[in-house]
Length: 138
View 1 (cartoon, rainbow, N blue to C red):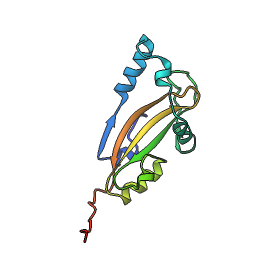
View 2 (cartoon, rainbow, N blue to C red):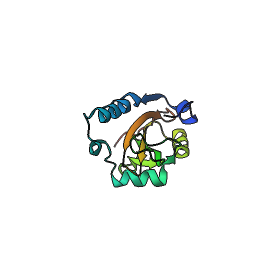
View 3 (tube, rainbow, N blue to C red):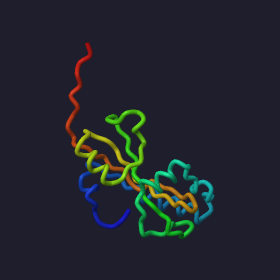
């Protein structure tokens, strides 16, 4: 992740950082325990989401060295309809959703469009925390 806390991170109730898992994956590649095709496996949907909803970061890809590394958020939660779960979103969308819905999880994934490297960087629990009042069924 990038240095310093972002507005999004300051609003999160729970943050899980996956940098140790990323480091272990890169170590596995350098020692030969993992093959490149095992980690450079970004699906077409992930590549499109990174292109249209992701933000370019000024960090070179750890595998191919290209400057095409981007980060994209995906959201999951009970508050979303089935077709909206797993949707790619921009950071500003997450902030407005955090004000509107009780709770959801946002996953930050880094993606290289050149070599198809992708890895989960972090997950955040966001939302306004207001419980939903459900009506009793009749």
